[in-house]
Amino acid sequence: MKTHSFENPTIVSTEKWLAARRELLRQEKEYTKLGDQLSQRRRELPWVKIEKPYRFDSPAGPVTLTDLFEGRSQLMVQHFMLGAGWEEGCVGCSFMTDHFNPTIPHLNARDVSFAAISHAPLAEILPFKARMGWEVNWVSAQGTDFNQDFHVSFTEEERVGGKVDYNYAMREFPHNEAPGISVFFRNTAGEIYHTYSTYGRGVEVVMATYRLLDLVPKGRKGSDGEDAEDGMQWLRLHDRYNQPADVLATS
Image 1 (cartoon, rainbow, N blue to C red):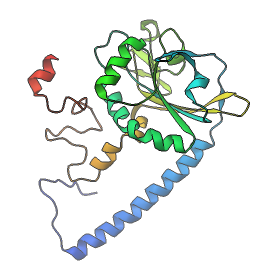
Image 2: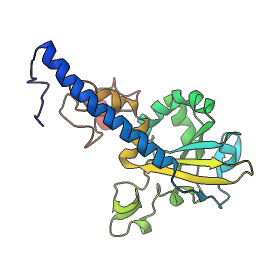
Image 3: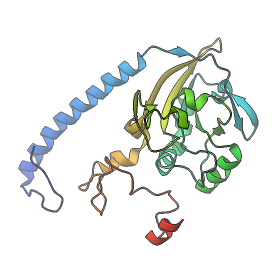
Image 4: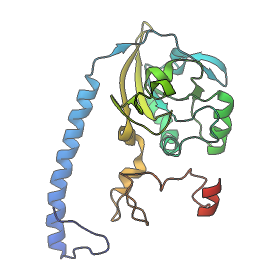
């Protein structure tokens, strides 16, 4: 495939553009159909029954995993990277929550509840949540095995040879906390099952900004040429984009 550059684009007639666009549309439809097939396979994955009685700290007091369903049958959890003592939440996870926040009423309408879960104590979660202006259910897993069981928090002992069990393989990871999305189902008998989890670039499913950037000439590349597929240095907390670089470097 010919390499295309927004700095040196190929200029053609409307007729040739339409021919190229129709061919791309054919490929886009193939991609969409493949995505539908993968979604079906995802729904057909076997389930694992949750046996542990997880309890989390919430603004209303201790809550169980059942409580997080809020009476619905499906629960989507964002594993938000915020460890004890961190000054603020992970920029990438914050980017995720910026997208999750407005979708919650629509998820609720389709029998899906949402909760963000972090390893930090609730007293450190709530100020950052207020700063970001998010209206999400966010609880603390501190003192539970939840984050370890879903492979998004790691102890130094778990860093075997500098690697951790993340995204279904032993791999190098730069932090003790990691991002992810997990899905659970609760049946009429009150039994809870883990049905799906995705990690790494799999969490881009919620990051609609990336999909929009894929439509524009520069794609995910920033003005500095950095490609978002290879790094996230361009990202800022949404209240930091208007800050000069020297302030960001010292904050």
